[in-house]
Amino acid sequence: MPGSSISVNGVKISPDLKIAHIYVSVWGSDAETVFELIQKNRGEISKALAGKIKSKFSPSLSFHLDSGQADSELIEGLLKT
Image (cartoon, rainbow, N blue to C red; front, side, top):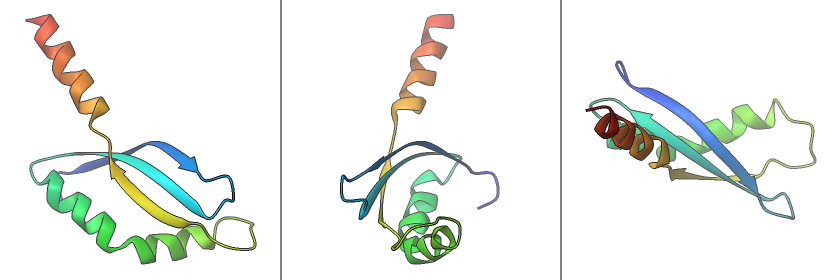
């Protein structure tokens, strides 16, 4: 969406390499909608990723909203005032 930014803050892969937990931050006026779109299009993202990695299978993607960066920026802003 125009005016939105997405950052991948971390990825944790299960020991069997079948599940990838992806932690993202979304900035912008409609962050919830953008995150919902990411989740809705998980299959398309997975297909794109499968073409980029060399593995027998592509891991199942599980997206999580990571508010740590936003919380950090809020605290930093409060400390500056």
